Image (cartoon, one colour):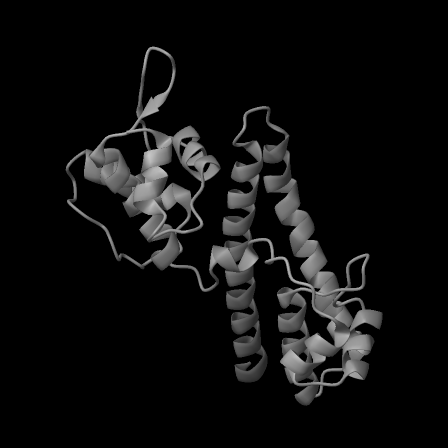
Length: 225
């Protein structure tokens, strides 16, 4: 079957899957569809089930592609028959959390209403650099989450300067991730951007999970030491 037919088989269960996503997984060696003499991909039912396994594992277990590849290799070699549902290496944060925000056009009033605060609070966070409207003055759903979380931290006594320090730390994390994932987007093949985005999301989830674990350990030392 063609890649278009494969999408028809998968779209009901995985509405976000695209041709680029499938090509990316092929470029990573997770699937190996046959090629016609003209170079067109031809997928079998086995290929579709393999894709379904990969997409389900990414969605439900949030595993990085490296781990999924190892699982597939184990199944291909007959070492195991199925690893579906294995979550031993599940990170604390989902890679999907780092996908580009859905395009929304929220006003300052909308953000305040959804976050349960005042427009003055929103303006304060804009001034602190925690959120930034687009050129038309609109915000995204991610901005609402930032405002909601920042207001909760304020309830615990966080000051504006302390929130700025968290923003600075986040930018440092982003710089580190960009150094690793960014160069992948410079490739000439049509999956380069997709590969960079996938890697960026997975690395981000792991970095934030590691950071959370390190903070937990540091606090334990602080309070118990």
